[in-house]
Length: 569
Image (cartoon, rainbow, N blue to C red):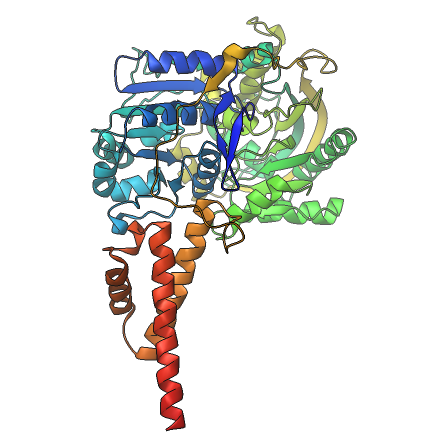
C-alpha cells in the first residue's frame, strides 16, 4: 500500500516510521493540500494509486501541528476499517476500530477512530466532539450521498472539524443527494482539488496495470414480463427492460454462458500464474445466492474450491484477508471486494453482476489494477458480458490505456445514451413481479477491447534516487502508551491487536465473575472500572486494560479461595 518503506528507527522492538517515499502525484497532492485555504479538500485518484498513503501522510503531518486533536477515518465497510487501521499503524498512527457510541470518549493512547458511514448515521452526536477541531478523512466520499440521512449525519458529525480530507477512486456526480463538504460544478460533477486518473498513472509507469477486457457475446432465451418467449444476442438493440432481462439471462447459473466464461477466465488465470504463481481471480456476483451458485460451477466444472465472501457471513472479512495473503486461485463476492479492498495479486476478473453504472464498473476494474513492484509486465484481464453499457465503460478505460482520446469508429452500437445508465429501480422492481424467467444462454465468441501489446509496456517504475519524493515525517503525536517489556505477553503484537485481546480477556473474566457471584455484567463492569479509574471500558488505555484484567483475576482468585475454604470447613 505504501510506495516505499522509507527510513525508520527501531525502538522497543517496533519500527517507527521517520520518512516515506511518495509517488510524484502524492507529493503534488500533499503540496496542494498544505496550500489549501478552506477546511475541505477532495482528492480523486484511480484505484491502486495510493490514496491511503497520501491521506495518512497528510493526517500525520497535520496531527503533529495540532497537539491533542483526533483523527477520524470513515470507510465504506467493516473490512476497510481494518485495512485503514493496519495502514495507519505503519505510520505510527493508532486508530481504534472497536469504538462505539456507547464508549462516549476515546482512550488516551490512540490517535483516533476508524468507523463506517453506516455507523456515522447512528452515532453522529457521539462522533462530533471527537472530531471537533480535528482531522477527518472520508474515504470513497460518494457513499455519503447513498442516502440523504447518511449525508445529513456526515454533516452533523464533522461540521466542526478543522480539516476534512475527502477521497474517491473515480470522479463522481450527485444528481439527488448532495454530498457534504464537496463542491460541484453546474453539471453536478464533483470538483476535485487534485485529480490523478488511470491514463496519467499508466504514463507514469509502476503505478497501475494495463487492464484488458475480453468481452463475450452470447445467445440468450428467456420468458419476458408478459410470459412471451424472447431471444437476443448482445449485438441486438433492445430497450432498457429487455436489455436487463438479456443480461440476467446470460448471468444465470442455470445456463451455459456463465460457466463457459468462467472456464475461459480460469484458463487465462493459469496462463498468468506461469509468471506470477500466486496470481488470483475475482468473480463479482449479483447477490449471495448467485455467489454460491458460481462457487458450485467452479467446483464442478474446474475442480476449484473458491473462497466465498458474502456480507451475511460474519467471517467474511477474515476470509478476504486470508485470500489476500494466500495463494488460492479464486474468490467470489458480491460487493465486499468491489471497492477499496487491497489485494494486489488479483489479475483476472469476471464481472457477473447486473450493476452496470460506470462508477461501480471502474471500482471493480480497480481491484485488478494494483501494481506489484518488481514483478515486470503484469497485464490484468476483466471478462465482461458484451452488454452495450459495459462495453462503453470498457472502451472508455481502454482509450486511456491507449493514450488516446479518439473514439473507436466501430463502437457505433453504443451511441444510445440511455443504454449507458443503470436500469432504474422501478424497472427492476417490476421485473421481480413479472413472469420473467431465464430459459437458456450460450457464450458465442470472444472479442477483446484491444490496447497495445502488453509485453514490454508500462514496466518502467519510478526511480528510487529522487530525494525530492522522500517525505521527512514530523514526530507522531505522543500517546500515553507504554511499550510492553521485551518477552512479555503481547510484546510482539501491535497496539491494536493487544487492545483487542485485552478487551476480549476482560469480557471473558466479567462473564465468569458474574456467573460465579450471581451478579450482573453491569455490576461487575462498574466495580472493575472504579478500581482502574475509568467510566467505561471503551475509554481505557492499554495500561488500564492490563490492570483491569489483573483486578478481575484477583477477584476470581478470591472467589476460588472462598469456595475452597468453605468446602474444607
